[in-house]
Amino acid sequence: MATDARETAKQENGSRVFFEHVIEKGKEPTDKMMLSVYDGYGPEWRDTYRKQTAALKKYLGVNKGYEYSRDNGIMPYIEKIAKIECGVSVKDRWNPMDIVLVKKSKKKVIEGTIKELTNIKGMSKEAKLGLLNAYMRETLNEKLLIGVSLKAIAKNKKNASSEVANAGGKSIPTEVDMVKGSLKCTLTLGKKKPFLFDTGELGFDMETAMGGKIHGQSRNFQYSKERNLVQTDLTPKGKDAGAKLGKVSSIALDSFLEGMGLNRPTSAAKDKNIPPVGEWTDSAKRYWIDLYKKLDSSGMVDFGEVAVYENNRRVAEGFESVLDYAIMYETKKADRSSAGRFSSKLVAMEWANIWVTIAKKGKSKEWCTALYYGAKKEFGNSNGPFLKIY
Image (cartoon, rainbow, N blue to C red; front, top):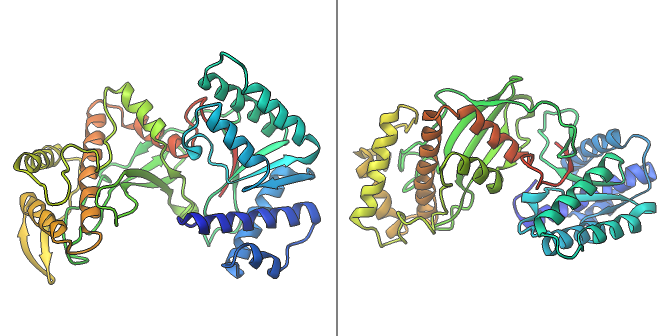
């Protein structure tokens, strides 16, 4: 799915229309109809929609008679109640559903029950959210109300998969661990592209107890912003390559880190050791120099070639030189992404410090498992149930 919100809306509405026609009418919508919903529709998207629809139809079995909602209908109705009555500030952290199916014959009853459960006087918003989630689990299990989360499907994947999340009755949780030696925070500056770090992230690999492979990265996903939030994102490798698990919920991160006596690195804009562009001090620079030395001595982080390149020639080496050049590049605005990639790299180093600290406490497996379920949005009773198609 695309990252642009308007484009994503078109694509998801394309899924909604395709679902409805095939499941309810027994035939695919015409190309003209699909283009009226999503102007980027073509053979590739037709293939994606067919895979999604086949997975949803397999889950539904003989069930039909649904209303398919995204921008209108029961989906925004539920989202509004979750926000106002249940304290949900960011919808996807609670429930990443993109489309909602509701049985037409039960719609009024379901809406009325949701309103009643979340309108109890004197009850906390947290308790109301628990009731809402419990009712949505019940209606999902009965296939009356189905929130569907759509993930990218690898081009070489013949059939889309589906799985229910947060609906109760989950089997023994999958254990996930870090792949030894995979923690990378490359500090090469200007070699691949002038004035920019070769990458802006902290990268790492994990493996599930069943042998599934996952690549993760913590970085700023919008480098054009000088000081932005760094998020952690997981993507399966191998047979499911390209089918992102998604970004790890901050709630899951905070829950685990607080239990370890640690704090999640803040956004670059709020980091006291990352001044605004042009306002660097010796004390701020010293913080990053000391952090680099600490991480380097741990032996856990691969920093690659710590050097600066200009015009395909190495002009300096060592972290202090890299830091000075990066500050100069962002001050001169040598590239529109130089400041954003630089601050992303610095916060990535703080995330590397989190990994090193957790490893020293012997909790790497627990940490990786928390990341995995945080990306799947399956880490507590505060998460709503949904069907994931990927």
